[in-house]
Length: 383
Image 1 (cartoon, rainbow, N blue to C red):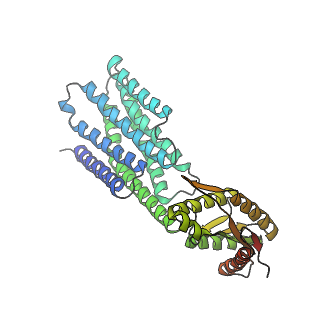
Image 2: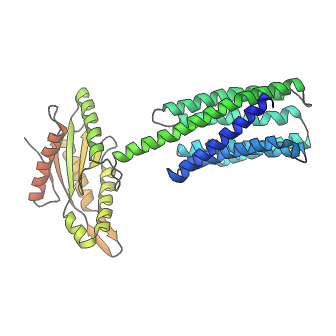
């Protein structure tokens, strides 16, 4: 067998392996839609490779060409759709579907209606190059810094685009009739460069999935599962980092401890499920009232801590009093059950020479005072 056949078989096995890997990850570990898209993308590419090997058995070369290239377009679309879903976008917008359909129709036209060797062979390589560059743009659109695996995919995509544009150019230079010289250049560029790039893309995509899983696990470790805000560990880490930055900027920082009033009675009278609903409603009100730059954590059953950055005692008291009033107007219902929530709040400055533990303790003292004075109150710790 020739070297190209060995490369072709190697690419087939790699594609099948990657399809199985992504399929197993989706089935057993993380059922994210983009992982499933990538599994099908590699599976379709593998199927296309199998059909390439079965070319002599097709009743018509034109039929073979149309089907194989349709599979290539589907694989391109699925791969891009995966990155779009991962970026929080619609998988297949109308523009993408129209684009893929248009490419296939033009390919059919230059294959059957108006045969043209160069034009029918240039479409898929050029489309692959364009889709790869669009994929790079989608990956780079995220607001957070790119990870190494993402830069790896971008690098492979750029090299892939260059190779595909080169192969497509050789294909186009054939003109109307197939030219053996340019056809061979097309084949060598396409089938020698592709296996390495195909493998590289697959491996970096696997690394992206691994990185996403790692990031998600880290987030779970610092997130309260009921409310979605930070847990005690997550709050402490974020608060300490925020305080260090505030000290460098010499801006004031305050701590608020909040506690739902008579929460044990809510659980006892209405059940824990209703109590959970009350906690989630309270959390939502906290998130709606404070700024995005402030940090909120659930540190106990019904107890929350808020770190307000660039906020002195007066401003913090004003915001917290508004928050108390918002909670006081909050009704939680479930079926025929209904209650009006109230909460008590304690405020303390987070001074430069204090630890987070000391600041939270001081805010706790103010919270105890609010409860002693009748609850549904805001009290300030004054040293």
